[in-house]
Length: 412
Ligand SMILES: [Zn+2]
Image (cartoon, rainbow, N blue to C red; front, side):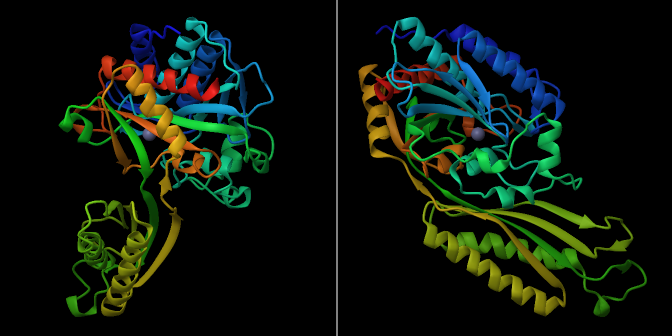
């Protein structure tokens, strides 16, 4: 089998997809089910059909592009990632796994390889939590981690329900039908940029992911009392933003306290109401993201945040409500997929390092229903989720090559 990645075509396709964006180049913004996202999906489906793949969509819009194997009834070998992008993001997050996965399949086709197991490229719906507040919507539903009932309760910030949004996007059928039957996938492997600096720092071109950190996210709302910034005297105040400030620092402290390098906590959104210079903040909404490779430690941090929250609410006489959006367990990647990836690297003489994924990915949820693992390539300075995110064509092609080799090993 002579595998050759068409690096120029792959680079061209990455550029082409990046132009389907709601932000000015080089930034990419593609929020799920916006006209731009729908255009990108149509463009991608056309590329898959050109490659002779059979394309279907499920009721949440996950795209499956299948290269049918000689044993069509056997469980498939899956690869893929996402093409949605947060506001002002870069071109590579997710896209490398989707277009790299497509190119890996095309390289296998060109080599004359014929799979026994079908090889399926997946494009997951809403890996990013931008619109509905929850990340990995598509893979959560596929794996049964999120129930159809819970998904139906999701709304975007305009109050439009997920049901309405997806039907407008032309997606029919009940969300109950998204969950994959047991044994659908024999294996799943996702190619992705590292979104961290370690590969670059060590001068190693590939990372084989052995575990994925456990994420949790909270939405906290703090209700105080508003009023005139001149009229209400300090002893009478119940300023929601001052309470939020204390809570934000308590959250940072809770993560630092574990002294573990893998514990991180971030308050990424702070919305202040009514938001006027001469008005005391009456209400604040915070979005909190907490992650760790160790579930117990992550949950300790969450308990620490809860007790800080109660103390601050009592001291400042404000009402603090907390909504847990998700708290997922970490995933251990499957030894047989890690093996297949390692052997593929060895065969092509490529160095790799085993690593932990601190960002979470659709593979976290795919690992609940199939043996799964991930392959990382370096990205410049570890930057991601920003317009200057960059992975070199050489690194991307190398990743696609090892992915192709791995898919062949798993599908033969
Ligand atoms: Zn991603």
